[in-house]
Image (tube, rainbow, N blue to C red):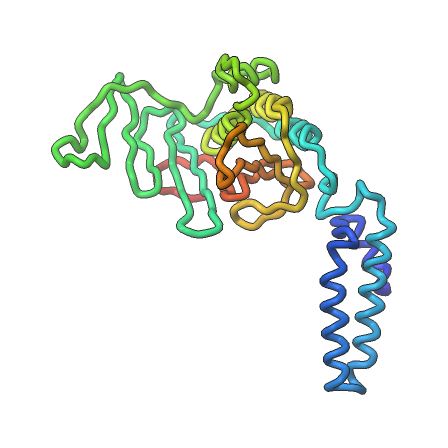
Length: 292
């Protein structure tokens, strides 16, 4: 198998970036070859020629590739936000529903570009003490929950009124229409609510667990938000590549305000996190502090 065969084989799987993106790297490669040739005229001659030929071959393959086949994964180049979110909805419906036991804990590990990372253990039914990083959160039993991490040592462990907050959500809509109404929370001003919706979608997909039908409805509802933008070749907070869905900022926002960008795997359309965070582990465990 020669270089062109290798290129074609690789292109079928991952594709390549467009030629105009590749040009700077090609120039650096050729410049390095010319510089090395001046120092090693005999040994480098063949290598430089082969490198130049390979770079040209790559450029030719990229230039001739159809637009919808260019990118780091299926459907990434010129991605459409509605198609990406619809594919994400279809993807979650293929996953088997695995309801947890009420006495289990949801473990989620979130990674950031700059540590420290985040680990949480949430009580599935909300009745047991959870752990957020190193801070305990009292479970709600019989309408009372102990207080932890208070500024007043005398209040530590005292009971306060509460209502259980389950992280396994069976109360959410299972259709796009109903989910969109739930996300908007009956707000009449929908034009400036896109950022709010983006954050709401992230929070539900992040440290909570939904039934597959509700997950699908969540992404289908998000696809109906006006003004979405698909960003090719982004990375999540852990550096994993994917396609980003950017929710527009409200009118009059500060120039320094940063929109939320949800990141999905470009091939499986699995939700990965945001450009600032990455959900790297999400599963059930039997006790606080346990890791899979």
